[in-house]
Length: 276
Image (cartoon, rainbow, N blue to C red; front, top):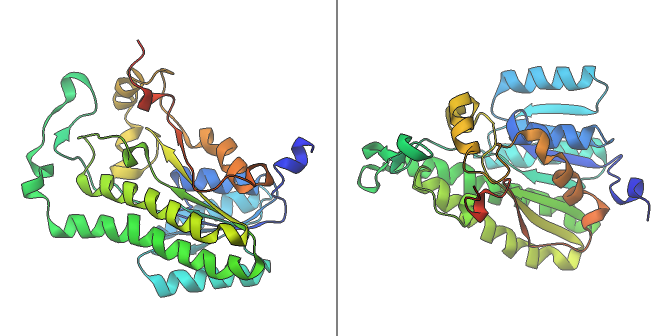
């Protein structure tokens, strides 16, 4: 098979949650640039408007809707609308997520690390915990359910969940709720992959390391933070959304036809340990 056919997504109907910035925008651009028809769902109305205009001006088949993944009826309707418009739903990226701030440790590496009482277990509020669960885990569940409703009758589809290396690697700088939701989303992905395999629907996860996005208040945009983290990443740099394009296309295309239930880490080797 030729590469052009192996990675072909032209004409696919695609939905990306959290699609108007960061990794979600990277997924949107990667699929749309290769001929897919993409609906971005995001809670940020301005970003939806700005990115939709920018991508449409570039000639890409992209539309956007303001949707909060915690509003499950609204999410279901957005899926229904996209499937009706495209006449098909081939690929879904369950990507929307939040990081509500530092965990028990503030700072990522070296001398910047110190105890953070606000993020300590005894001070972790129900509100903070529940909001992360509502978006990062319940939102993924609702997205997978909506995708299955449209894909099962056609007996084909690709679902990709954004987890994190935090799903399997402890990091005290990250809040406890984030860690729990990413681990939960990874196991939910495997459960759903097992259930849907007989319908020719693959379900996999992308587990990013440190990527420069707006999550967690945009701390990753700080050059000093990037430099500090790059110092312990074996590839000596942090990740950017463009680094996701190849993996996103792989999991969305026929190239990954026989892969399901897998969590693929993309972190420059960070989870392997410090090399030098």
